[in-house]
Image (cartoon, rainbow, N blue to C red; front, side, top):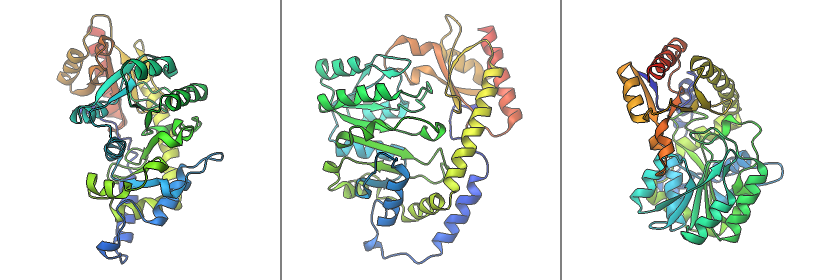
Length: 355
């Protein structure tokens, strides 16, 4: 089965680098269990703060924590901000796993209208006024599934709405590594209210399940204990490996390689599915594809699977609106063999042609 559903961009050399680093650091003596921090050592957090900081925005190491991946970052943010049972504003199309995690916590998601630049500030303000949302969850840089990158002026406008309405921002930057020139995160504009996380599952490897989580300074007290409760703390070994791979330039090299590979893969998608309406970031491994009129996404996915290709239905990303049922998300991150990708795209095109 050709996998166009899941999306962990792999080059093929990640495993060897990680295995070598794990072997190197696992052989080193470690501190007693009682002395191990649950969210990274002081050095890990110092390197994390430097990695995330920009020329005009320096992040204090005391506000950065290591956690066990992006999903753990979401869970920690929801718990730290006491959002269980609250209402949270989201884009009209939202990361499915965030929807699932919200449902588990009785959180009501309020879908806000947007345009080609992302969620509309007036829609967010209305959600705060009418629905009493306490927070907003956004993926402004290489949005999943649209691939859009929100402009700086829109980020400023949203930051103002967040501040005016005393909202919490949960900013998921899972795909920022694919955009070399993206504006600064919205979180940097409202750090007093923002949870920001950068996961390394995609820029590096899903085998190293770890992420950097930036927490508002006023909520940092007790955050390490909360991380220990949510996911039993972060692996000190993983923290050491990630830190070493950042310092020796390995992470930067992988990011550059994956940007180039993503650009090549996106060109393959465009040529292989010529004639279909596609939205995607130029370097992304995923695309948002509009299906022919009167074509249901779920039925289309079943037809593709019957041909030997798995893709994702747009309904998983929608928040109640009917529009998402005419779209699919096609991702080529999990497939490294070029012939399999070309074959899979041809099969998807065949199904689309007969729809």
